[in-house]
Image (cartoon, rainbow, N blue to C red):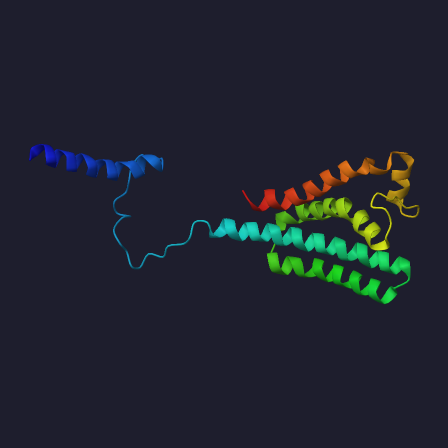
Length: 180
C-alpha cells in the first residue's frame, strides 16, 4: 500500500514538474493557475501573425505597383495610351492605399522606401520587356539605367543575378522588419 501511494505521489510530482522543466521556468506561480473570470487573456501570437500579414501585404502592394507601372509604361510606348495611363494610375493608387492598410510607424518609412526601390530594380525591366514582347534580358537605349548597363558591355543574362539579389533584399526588408 505504501509503495502504491509513493508511486502515485512520484507520478503526480513528475506530471507537475515536467511542464515547468520543458518550458524552461525555474518556478511556477500557482496564483496564475487559479481561474480568474475577470482576467482577459490575449493570444500570444496575434501580434506576430499581424506583423507577418503586414509584411506580406507590403510586399504584395509594392510588387503589384511595380508590375502595374511597368505594364503601363510598356503600353504607353506601344501607343495604347488609355490602357497605359490607367495602369499607371492603378500603380500610384496601390502605393497610396498600402500605408492606409498596414499603418506604418514613423521609423519604418526609410526601410519601406528601400524595399520598394529594391523590388522595382529587380522586377521592372522583366515585366516591361515581357509586356512589350521583347526578350526578358533586353536592355533599351533611352533611360539612364539602360545607358549605364550598356556601358558594361556584359552578356545578355549578366544582370539576372544582381536583379534577383535586389528582389530578394526587397522582400527581406519588410519580412525582417516586421517579423522579429
